[in-house]
Length: 128
Image (cartoon, rainbow, N blue to C red; front, top):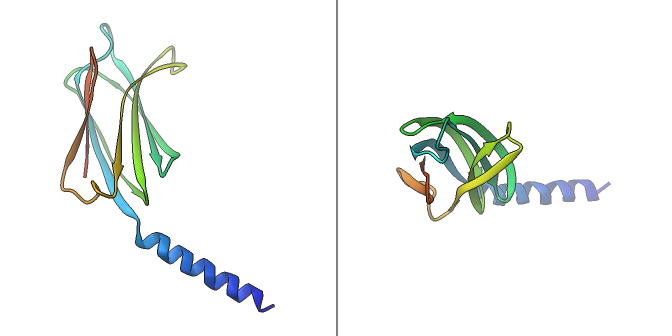
């Protein structure tokens, strides 16, 4: 019976330490400066990985000049990775346009921007 309170106390200490080193980042928007597709929209898929685990995805058809307002906050302890794809064939085929990884060094900044430049496309991810 005395093992239960000890295990609970250790669990509480562990959670407190883990939360003490958490960082918040808000993904603000994704802007298309030059789309990947020649005809039609880019069918954009944004995947978000928190500490290596896929936690969220967003889908949006985009054209040159459009901005996709995301405005969602994510909390991480080591890193937050965002991967942007252009999908085709109703999402069955996808081509990675680029990725950005945010670490504790970039968290808390007023506004940052990550570029996904390619030979025929350019997307800008804004976060704060």
